[in-house]
Picture 1 (tube, rainbow, N blue to C red):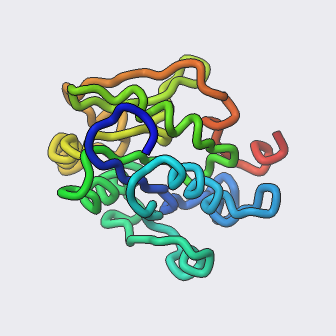
Picture 2 (cartoon, one colour):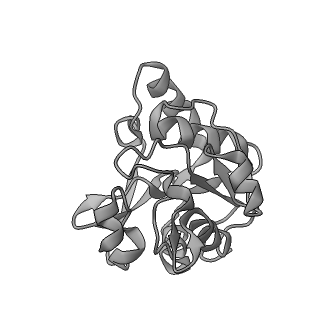
Picture 3 (tube, helix red, strand yellow):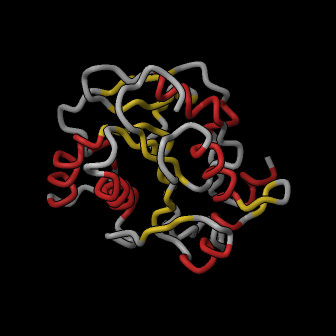
Length: 191
C-alpha cells in the first residue's frame, strides 16, 4: 500500500454499465492491446492491499481475463448500486475502498496513490478534480459511508455525488488529466 493511510484498503472496478453511447461493452475495448478493465485493475492493484474485484459486467469474460469479479447487487441501477456492492464486499475487511470505473484507459498507479495520500483521520470521500469537476468514478471511499449511501439509495438516489449527505469530501487537484479521463463514445477513443 502507498501513502499514510492507516488500515486496510480494498479496490474495486465498476463494469456494470450499459455502454449505450459506445455501442458495445467498454470494459473489453482494447487500448494498446489490453482490455480497458484489465488496465484499470492493474493500476488499482498496484496500490491497494487486497485483490481488486470487478463489480458487475460479463463475469465469464472477466474471469477469462484472470480477473476477480462479483455480481452487482443492483444491476442496471447506476453507479451508486455498484459502489454499494463494492463497499459491502469489503465491509469488515477494509477501512477504505478505491473505486474506479472500467472506462479509464489511462488510469495510473500515481493517480490512485494520490487518493490514499489524502486520507485523513476523519472519514471522507477522496475525489480528484478534472477541469474543476469532481471525478466520482475515480475516488477513495470510507467503508463507514455505506449506511449513508444505502439510505440515499433506498430513497431513490442513483448518483454517488448526490448520496453523500454530510459526508466530507476532500478534493485532489493537479493529477495527470489523462489518468482521469473516461471514454463514453467511439469519438472519445479517437482522442
